Length: 369
Ligand SMILES: Cc1ncc(COP(=O)(O)O)c(C=O)c1O
Image (cartoon, rainbow, N blue to C red):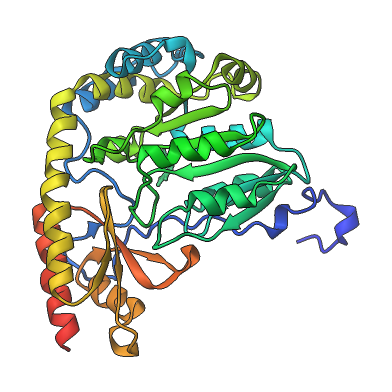
């Protein structure tokens, strides 16, 4: 290894080495565990749509051919299902990519971008990557606080990153509150509504953001196929005003969505029966898991997503860390969330019936131990 001094080798831009790399949820259990239930990444326990699997298989024989760089057919399928204009959609390699492209495009060094106390961690990474300053604002009862966000806006603020619902809390802002937030922002500040879990929300006062985007110049909505069975395929999208679509199209990779993702995505979004099954499964088991864990004496943050944030007792024996070890040893892989400001909580994705019942049974024994 060449031990040359820092000056003698390429060095990243100022600030890059201050970024704490994202640590994805674990996917393995200790050796010897017979069956692993991965409940750490909010994937769909029903798996991909069978139609998406078939479509991905069909692409395999044509892997030599570049994909359509504009993902036109995928945009049209999304537009048809959601009643949108396909020209206002950009598809991406997961919605993460779009979040990064927005940061890269709208943030310059020294600019500020607002995130919330327990907001999705990837935002901070992209803000720092752009050389900008993440400004974290307090939440109230583990929910974004519109007044606190508005109070944090300065002349340097360029983007507000808002996950609605948020990960890892599962809480959401009713749409009246989102509108109030938008109304209070200067028009040059971009409001980014990250609606990664929108499909799962069953609340009359929730909206993902379509109408707000359509009626304003400074709002975008990002979405993903990851939580409905295509996490591995990496399909995300954004609905945005034309001037933002135009800017992002200049900076994105020319073939940023691969051929398998395009075809699997088209088949998945058209398979409404699979989406409905997935949402219905979640509705049933989200309530069940929340109630059962609460009965065990654990505090569960009320969630509208496909996961729950579970808080553990303050005694060392029954801490989140101890629970994580106990569950992992039995094949239940949950998500540690210390990095999100919850050192004594675990996030659990809603799983199959077997996994949900298994976690509740294991925690029942754990808490008695
Ligand atoms: C709030 C939120 N936004 C965006 C994403 C990114 O999803 P993907 O890049 O898989 O589309 C996630 C994934 O966990 C998320 O929780």
